[in-house]
Length: 271
Image 1 (cartoon, rainbow, N blue to C red):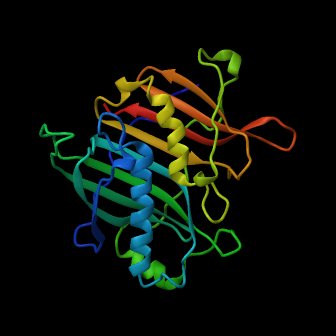
Image 2 (cartoon, rainbow, N blue to C red):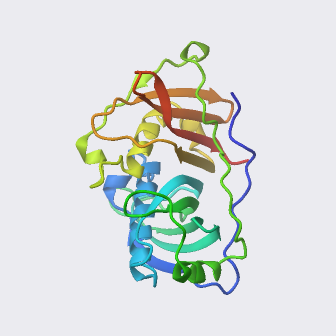
């Protein structure tokens, strides 16, 4: 089993292109015991930003349904609490049915009685592969209005899907760490009975407790969603440490009871 592909920095915003911007504040529900915003917290930020962005786009009525296939999170400087942060969101690449949406999060760190020592300002770069969907849940061509809006933001108009994580999990007998079950709560699911994108990262944060060395310098987290997880589904976590990377597979049983990968995750140091 190999680690994720070689690190490549995300492309910057096209000069002169329009983009969405908004201000938010870090809340205590998204931080760990060291005041660091967790990966699931960042995933929640990204969902909020996407919802706020699409609400003001001209194609909010013609293209309202999107699902995420992959999210890449580069934590270049951790965001901590207390902090205010500004987001910038734009289209980094697209094709006729999907887009890569870039979000830059720039945090201004503050202090309070609970965290009185000054800290560096946070910086996180992200990229998410979004697929346009019909109301019935089928991939759909992006409308002409949406294409006109999005193509103006980027010169990359031939976006193709290419997996960045190993999608196949190794056999449990080949690993040092045993499989474990991850218990889901009903609050982890959205109104469409899909596991919330942020909830996947909660299982990953449980693993990172034992791999804190990956978080003490810039790091990249990649999650690829392969199959839906619905309420009542049994989830098994399989994991493997490879040098400066932690690989995690969230697995669910198929109709025959055999485990299959529902999501693949990697967390690795940025060289």
